[in-house]
Each structure stands twice: as structure tokens, then as C-alpha cells.
Length: 360
Image 1 (tube, rainbow, N blue to C red):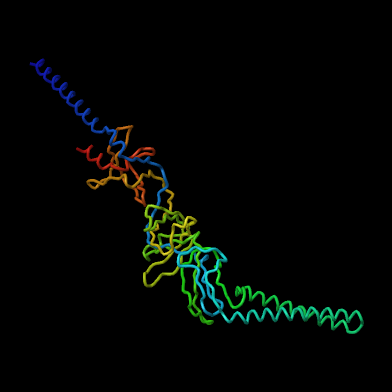
Image 2 (image 1 turned 180 degrees about the vertical axis):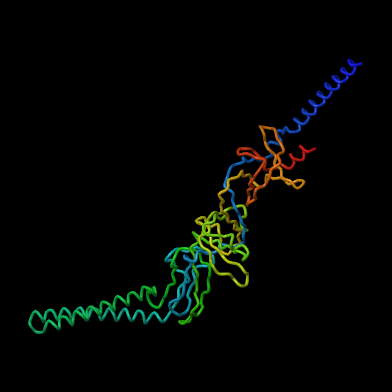
């Protein structure tokens, strides 16, 4: 009887081992990724990084106010021509508009009078020197002639300076020129317009946009989260996939009573001209803690049954589900406290399909 019972136990053990082996082989095959699946996935390697804090804000792109110039007409008159349109790129010194003005006649008269007075003073000094040599006048007379010449030279210099400021060419024509190279961002002038001499409004705004500002609107409740030097990633509605990098270099310590928000500034390089002033922007700012943790792309995470998982790529075509503990999610990264080690490879695209297959 004992031998019979022992035989049954041995037989059951063999069958159990055989069944277990078959189950393991089936599970093993379930972890194996096909060539088609391998081509459809993307992976990322887990890395030890300092933990980041990332916050997202809305704002806009603005022209650099340090390279933004209002152009005013220095004289009144009739607008003969306007050579540029809104949005045009202009170079420094380029003629923007031409104005016919009777005010220029006075400027030209001053230059002409100063030139005449200078010639007279030069002749008077020459005569005074000759008479002094002939003992016909005194040294005081020569000094007086020199003084009058100096006054005439000063007046001539002032008149020329005024003429240069008014950009006088000839006749009564005044040319408005671009003070810097940049884009015409405002235009308040048209052909045949009559400009008053006491006009206080500008006729053009020229902005050099080789550098622009990203203005960050910070809600009152988030002000404590933002500080100078924080790294910034800026994207616009024009091209959301394009990221521009900078840092917060100024915080305006004033709260707008209408929006209950404070503004901060990020200076961005814009030599490509892709960033357009007044376009809407999303600005993500981040700071780094002194804590180091394993970091992976946030899109590698799978949330299921109130737990987080990732799909590990263990070898060329072997995948494994791994539960992880989240320390913090910040921006596009997830920092892991348990479940992953540095250099582990996680699947970041189509991992949900693999996860479901492995759970079947």
C-alpha cells in the first residue's frame, strides 16, 4: 500500500512539474516582442538626476523694450510719401517717409546766416591782424575779432547740428529715417496726411527683434514658487512643438489689480525671427533640489488599479511589467523612489498595448 501511495505521489509530482514547465514556457513566450512590435516602440534609459520642480504659466512674446523706439516727426507738414508698411523689416538710416515742411526754411535760413556771419568774422580777424601789424589798432581789437570769430564758429556748429537732426536735404523736404534696424511694429502715418507741428503722437515704432521677451503671468498664489535664475522653456501657439530656452532674469514686483498676477521676464534669442511679438506663449519654469532620484519620461508610466507601472525592456525582445513608486512628477519627467535602477530601459510608446498583452 505504501509503495502504491509513493508511486502516486511521484506521478503527481512529475505531472505538476511538467505542467509548471509548460506554463513557464507560455508566459515566457508572452513576454517576447515580435519584430513588428519592436519597430513600433520607443524606449528611454532611466538616469539618476537631481529632482526638479516645474511649474507651467501662460504669457506672451513681447519686443525687447530696450530695442524698441518710437519715431516722431520733428516738423509738421504734408506727407509726400510713406515707404514702408506694418511688419516690414528696415535698416538703420532707411527712409521711412518724406514730408514737405515750410518749417525747414527757417532751419536752412539759420544755417545760411551762420555761414555768412562766419565769413564776416574771418575777414574781420584778418583785417584786425593786418592793422595790428601796421600799428593801426591795438591788441585788444585783435582779441575782440578772435572772440567774434569763435562765436560765429559756435553758431555755425549749432546750426549744422540742428540741420542734421532735422535731416535737411534740400528745399523744404524732410525725411523720416529708421533710427535702428528692425521691424515696423506700429504705423500711424499715410500719404497726403497733414501733420501738425505740435503733434505729440509717434508716427512709427521700430523694434529690433533679434532678442525678444517672454512675459510670464504669475498668479498671486504662485508667486512664492518663482525666483530669479529659474530655467525656462517657452513654446508658442504658432509652433507648440518648438521649444525655446532661457531663464528668468527679472521679476516685476507689482501685482496687476485687474488680473491679480505678477509678471516675470525671460530673454530669448530670436535671430531666426520665428518668435513674433504679441503671440501667446506657454512658459515652463523649473528649479533643482539637492535630492537625486531615478528619472524617466513621464509618458512611460501606466496607472492601473491605483498603482503605477512601467514596461521594462529586459533584453532585445523581452519585456517585463514593473511596479514603481513615484517620488514626484515634474514637467515631462517622473522621479522614481522604488522599482527602478539607473540604466533600466523603459518603453515610452505603445507600452500600454504590451502591458495589456502581458496581463492577459
